[in-house]
Image (cartoon, rainbow, N blue to C red; front, side, top):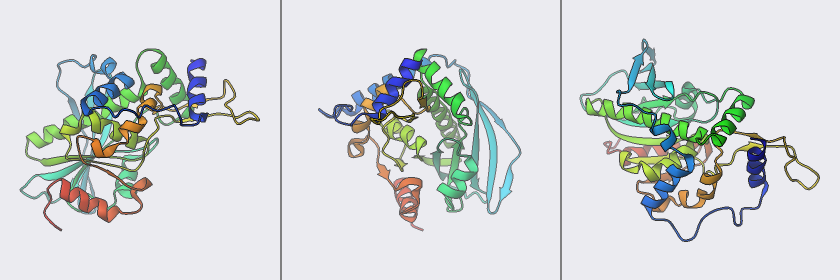
Length: 288
């Protein structure tokens, strides 16, 4: 595992020339498959049984003009995935547009609603936010990341799978007429997931919004006098993936993606009004 950590640290320290696959451009379907292969998503998907998605709901809470409900979504092999569902308390007769919002390390769902997407639920959206586990301690995340990479899977695959479970739940709500079109939104580490998922799950989303062009290497390390990583000091975070790192350039070629992708400043701090109007347009919401 030490060798893997040192390798990822050296990738982070190296100049970008020659690191990324950028020529020739990959066809959409090929890139989508390469992304799934890079994160080893099949290693997680094959553990999913035919059992339906398990859902445990907790009592709802009124927050202003909105209703928030905590849920556990459960499926093999990840167990229970905590999510927060927020919707306007006054539900109109027609289905509401939905946003699957994927946050960053240690970002609570309430922070996503209050700081990243303030006022979106009040605007008339259903927002579902997964809470990613394993991001509470750097050392734990580092060990889990390396163990999964060395064991034939990846932390990234688990994160993608948990987002897919959240999407499955939203599609269940859509089948019941409770929500309409669905957009995917990613912040920081969640943006890396959204950017990649746009290429192999684009048909399931009306739009994808992101605030980061990801390199898929997230590592800290001590440096020697030449600025190079010192062996044994690297701490590798869960969104690091060497194979996905090589695909970072074609993934960021959003104009070729099979779904409309919008790129905003980090944390959506600028242009948020335009983001909301863009979502309105892409999800078929009447002019406000």
